[in-house]
Length: 406
Image (cartoon, rainbow, N blue to C red; front, top):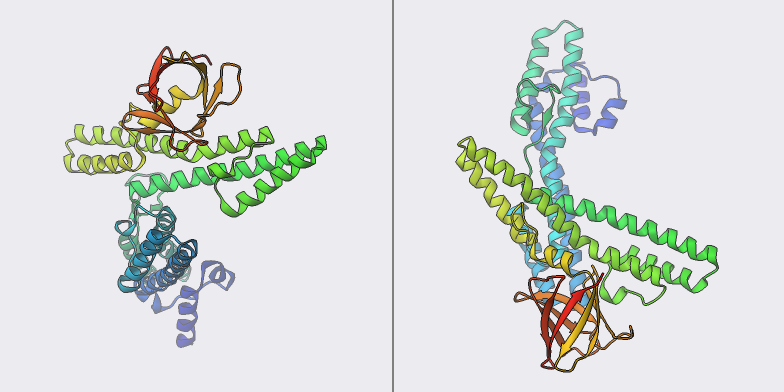
């Protein structure tokens, strides 16, 4: 009977929690003494499965890059695939900056691997807690205390106890790298915006259908199907009509960058406050570690200090809107309409589209507009942008001034 009970307990410990709890309550057995070792084995097994999935995903990504004819991305994916096959490890130190597709896969799997020890430990503690309760009901207090020691051993090894005096009395996981937390938060917010974009597309299609506008319905349906497959909006995807769809595309195309900026700035603000408090408390080593995290986020997302916006955010806030332009010496007048998605739409004095419509970027302390119709043509605006009067020059040798009118 002892052998049968021992086998049953081992099976219960190795099965997933919902199966274990569906069985009869675990019978007390000496095998609880091996709980910490079994925990380590389960962690290794689950980590290996996740690693196998990671290797397969990176290989698929490499194949995708090869089909697209992208040499640099193919080489980067192949290098990471070979590295992982040899080292069998994946940490934040292994995460690349580019290509972004590979980086996102790495971040997702780093998070999964980081969660394994805590998840397994919590599952094992739940099983051991049931065993401890059974021993207590049976009056076997020594055995119950022995099980508690195993629980404590697992907590010390895999979990950080909640601070003494805490009301929850629970446990919490080891802190995750703050830069990874920031990136995960950005990914979550972007995923939410993506889901919202799909909902708005569906609502727009119903609106057009109710109006009997067949062409518009199909335009929205095509965008819906394209987006569900691609998951992003690029310049080439922006439609000319219907206008409501075009505006919706422009709005959501600009969102990911804005989300990244806003989220990163929020993290920088919180970390700078933490750094200040640690400095006041004399914990200089901890304060320096927080300072390094701040710098990582600032460099990655081009975010300045907590009290300042990034250069892009400042230019975006100042530039978006309609501007009246006046060129010298030609005397030509017209308008520029700058939008949040990075477009600069030029119109003549009569409101008709002009030739220099294009995208704007920030280069060498200037806003540069490159014409879509004439790739070699450009207009440059001096920074900082001032609504009262801003000025610049263009490739034709003329200078200009512009005043914001709305």
